[in-house]
Amino acid sequence: METRSGRDAVSPPSAESKSPETVMNLGKSVRIKGELSGSEDLTLCGQMEGSIKLPGHTLTVGSGADIKAEISAKIVVIMGAVTGNVTAGEKLEIQATGSVTGDIVSPRLVIVDGGHLHGKVQMPSPREVAR
Image 1 (tube, rainbow, N blue to C red):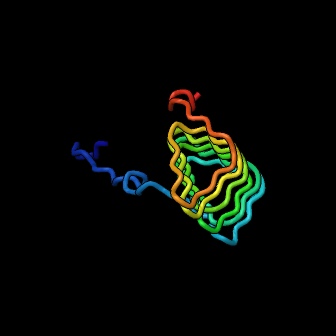
Image 2: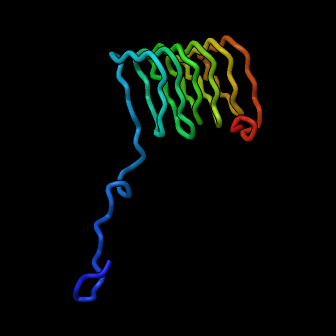
């Protein structure tokens, strides 16, 4: 941008260029019923029933969470209870306090000692999951 004097004016940096990656947190008292989708990382600590779609982002299910949903995200970290099918484009982690009752599709699967899984597992290549 040029000023009347012919010198270049410096535009202030936008807020977007300074802000770190956003993570949305939904607390223990939050209850959601329906479809949840987004384009940022999400941490759920309450109750959810329906579907969750976070393409290209991380979903973290907190240790006190109770989720009854079909889940699709790039990375899924489970520390609470999930009932429903889970598709992770890159990796699924079930932590020691986590449990999944449902089928899993993910190229990488980590189950920490104490974590529970009751369902089928498919481990396609990352390209196959992206389709």
